[in-house]
Image (tube, rainbow, N blue to C red; front, top):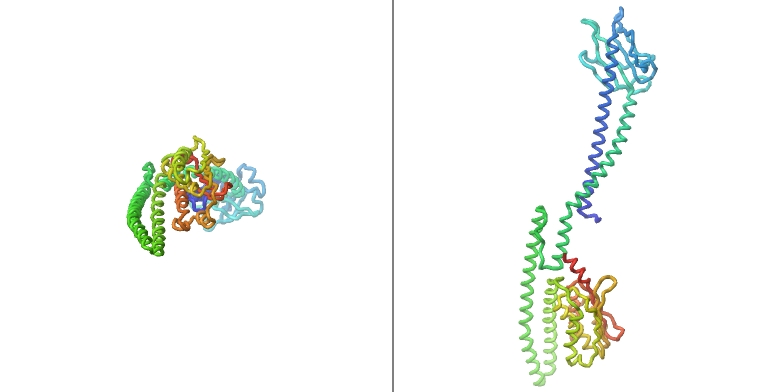
Length: 458
């Protein structure tokens, strides 16, 4: 998953939100659990306090006195963690569990009307939860401070155990929520995957458009892309039309210049005629190159519209070349399975193979071979070879390194090969030029199979 992936950003944001929510839930729930424990302890201490109050009285010296303490054995065990104490200005009585220690007195005294709780540092190095209240046994009598306390260590242990169990539960819940978020992101981004496939189709087939079967949230984007594609196609159409008009309009002046060159040569001005013919050749190559580009653009716009049989195209082309002056003395060996298909329209395939076979026949001595096969990698491969002298190394280097259409060398003998290269690449194919074992040039053309082309379109 790439660093700038929208999916990764959404997943990281969801994971962060879930983590923060789980941490907040853990702290809040453990705090609520601690509050709940304190309320429960306060209720238990109040129950013990009621027993103390039932037996609480004042001695003749006005000291608080409890004849029968609560029956809880922890009150009689020193340092047990459970204590009670009654006190006033005249004296104090406390549980045996306090031994010779005492509970800290509050300042000021708690009210007479309600119980009050607080946490204090008590005897024996213990942290105590203290419940206290002022009691008046009779009108006008001196208030008595009643205090009960319990060691908070049990609360800490319960809170720790609860926090551990809660953390495990929240970790599992967080993992489930992150998985649900991942599923939600996957479902939410599914329309974008469809949009990506349609954009690839639009890139390969400019005449197509994005469908309107997308969520309304991205409908403005779809409309904007379609309007941009319409404007691009209109601009390209106008540019092609102007280029075609310009290229065709130059043919008549070039023909007139050629006639002037012939008259100049007949008048004995051979040097001037050679210069004119050289200029005419360069201009003719430029016109043919521009027409070749227009043909390449047309083929690119018709990408994947059909698949053609290279055997049918090759046999028709060979049948024509064999009746020409350059082909009547050659042997053509065509070995292509009838079932083989190339993802190129038949007319475009004929033009492509026609240029290559004619080029091979022009430079062959006695033999031209053409083979077709399906490779192990699932590609359609066509091979054209001749037994001629081969292409000049400079021209071959120009062709292999994507030379321009006006850099085909003297006489522009490589112009057809460069146009063929652009035709092949316009149909998502590849062309490779090497030296043939027959002695001449070997041209290898390859495309994805027709079935794969159909898959790419859908």
